Amino acid sequence: MQSKQFAIGDIDGVRFYYILGDTVWFYENCALDSTPFVGIIVAINEDNMVDLQLMTSLGQIKTARRGVCLQGDDRLAQASYKNKGCWRPRPTVAEVHQYYSSFTAK
Image 1 (cartoon, rainbow, N blue to C red):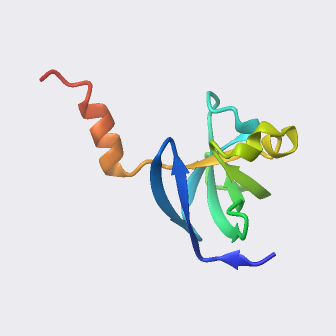
Image 2 (cartoon, rainbow, N blue to C red):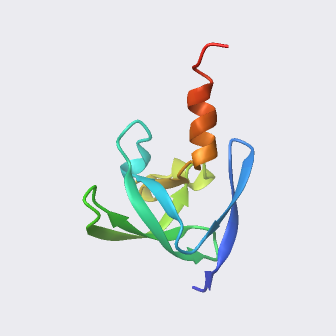
């Protein structure tokens, strides 16, 4: 399987680009209510699934995951894909600021 340099993702109608080396959130068994691991995209496959290198909270390499789907991917309805986990992009500083500023009094 060939690897691409970048791809376009879509979560809830929001499109974004992801490239090799991006840091992302990885959720075991796609449990989005759990604490995510930090993952680094090391390969983007032709089917837009990614291979991730996972890190611990101390920055140590935990393990590698192959063929991980983006959150919201239709394939996650199948247990074989969901058991591999899923990933989503980490928010940018601007997105975090916008989120927290929505709580301030106007």
